[in-house]
Length: 233
Ligand code: DC
Image (cartoon, rainbow, N blue to C red; front, side):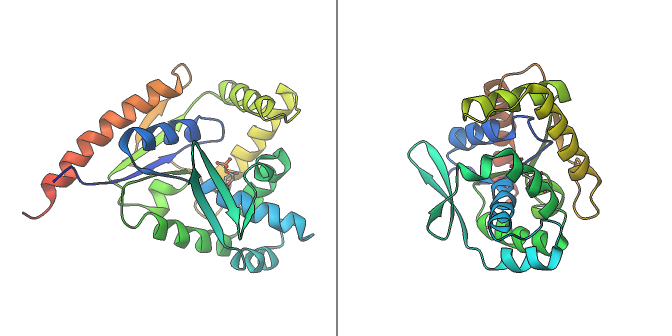
């Protein structure tokens, strides 16, 4: 029998490169990749479309409870669906990102999405990225990574990513948006962005996504072996 398929939690602030790294790690190990942030973004998008302010906790939670969110792997890309509608591109707009960090501070929304995320990862063999994956969603994950980078580098990467997606923005504006979102994500009452005590801290400021992914795959293979030998014979 092969090694045990574990749960890998990758947390960190916006623009630290979590998505690219998590995807590469999942590909390297043959695991499922789950972008938990996409789920908060879907709620934000639908709330905006329904004319609900992202601060209106009860209405946002009621809207979130009506949604069926799916993350589907198709060829080389992961598509984000709400019902049958593909919202992969729509949720990447900067205004959706800002609203996502507001709806993510609503306890009832978090409870709902965390339960769905736990179900998605119940069988192991997953790489899930977000802000609270190692601290709240999978506190017993076999491998937890806290991925960080300097705020200048994170803004630069996010700006470049937006340019590639055809989203117009200045570097200064992106930097201000990242700072605002970071502050909201770190200072909220429920499940703020924190490094779990047993997480491995990686600073990706001067490393490529491929280099970071290689380090994580190496760690994961050791943890897979350890998890396998801990199983009863
Ligand atoms: O990772 P992202 O930029 O797509 O996340 C969008 C927002 O959702 C971000 O502001 C923080 C929030 N989020 C969260 O609170 N918990 C998660 N597990 C993932 C994202």
